[in-house]
Amino acid sequence: MKGFVFHGPGQSAWQDVPDPAVKEATDAIVRVDVVTICGTDLHILKGNVPEVRPGTVLGHEAVGEVVETGRDVHTVQPGDRVLVSCITACGRCRFCWERTYGQCRGGGGWILGHVIDGTQAEYVRVPYADLSVHALSGAVDSKDAVLLADIFPTGYEVGVLNGRVHPGDTVAVVGAGPIGLAAIATGQLYAPERIIAVDLAPARLDAAKGLGADAVADAREAPEQLVADLTDGLGADVVIEAVGAPEAFELCTRMVRPGGHVANVGVHGRPASLHLEDLWSKNVTITTGLVDTYSTPTLLRMAAAGRLPTSSLVTHTFPLDRMEEAYDVFARAADTGALKVVLGEPQHDVVAVRAA
Ligand SMILES: [Zn+2]
Ligand SMILES: [Zn+2]
Image (cartoon, rainbow, N blue to C red):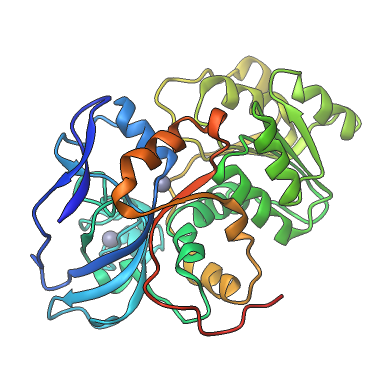
């Protein structure tokens, strides 16, 4: 089969790789119908995630059909259409019992396209299939569902829920890429007073407005002043960092009000300064996190009811074998306007009527 292989920083190829096979009784093999590229994959290609070994097939998000299962897989069977979650869960370790699947110590966590071969291929082996894939109802389109493998649960859990967005809050989201946009979309579930989006790219700020941001600010034009002006000088109740850069994180800590929350979502490859000389007396809570995907079943029900704006994040679609071109378009997002690029062809028609 073909897969997209990382060969070290700056080197990758769509090439022949061995077909995956069931290794453990808890494995499933999934034929990949729809797959997407994550900002994290770009971090890997830049060499920011050194534990990814050359030779690894990348990708941790997919929708496909189960074609084979080990004898201890009970929740899905061949023929089922499934969402492959970015997080794998053994279901038995301390962290899995606490629903923090991202920290699984039993062989799960973020492993696909990281420490084992991932989803950017024609087939993928998914360990611990019972807790790591979600059977899809006919009501969810595959191209919508694939955004629930990582983007939506990450924006929701690590941004909105870790940041403790409450009704009436002012929420600032720094970074209006796919994760920031998912945070903007799901932040509105909590009826904030306003959401302010900050980015460098006008197209992304437009997308933020389209998803419900009430105000937008260019990151180069003192966005902390806009936040201060809108909040009587107080600052935002919740600031979500969805970039993964020191300057973005430090901006967040300048925008938060005393007693507020900074929820870091971004993947950082360099150290950021924590200005305790400004923050020590402000009662600020800073959270970090890898997504756990405990919210995925909830988000899938919402997607099936037409209550998540998933499709508005998809700007480009490609057939699977144009992976290298898709990576190029995604990596040059400032020029191409790419938000999410989705590859592959759904094999099933949507049968249920979605809410208007
Ligand atoms: Zn990802
Ligand atoms: Zn576990």
